[in-house]
Amino acid sequence: TGDTRRENMDHALERTSSTLYAHQPRRLRGGGSQQRDEDLKKIFYALDKTNAGTISTQDVVESLRSYGIHKKIIRSAIAQLDADKDGKLTADDFLRLKEMPTDLIERALQGQLAVPDWHAFINDMAEIYK
Image (cartoon, rainbow, N blue to C red):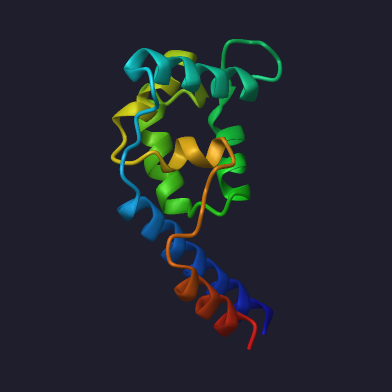
C-alpha cells in the first residue's frame, strides 16, 4: 500500500543518509579555515534570497529534505546551527557547520552528495518498489 511504501522509503532514506553522515570524513577545502568560512558564507548568501541577513531554519530544512537528508539528521543540524532557537540563521550561525562531525550538510546544500554504498542503496530501492 501507499503507507507501506512511504515507510519503506523513509527507512531507506534514513539508512542512506545515516550512512553518509557516519562515514563521510570532514573535508577542509584548500586554503584552510578562512577559505572554508568564505565558502560557507557563499552558501549562506545564496540561500538568503531576500538579502535580509538571515535565512529561516524552515528553508534550510526544506532544502536538505529535497536532497534526501533524513529528518533526524536535519533536526540535529538545525539544533546545532540555531543555538538561540529563534528559527532564523545568521551567517555566523551558519559557520557552525564547521563544528559538525562531517560536511554532509554543507555538501548537500552545495548539491555535492554521492551515495557511498551504491549496492545497498539499489537493494533498498528494489525492496521499496517490489
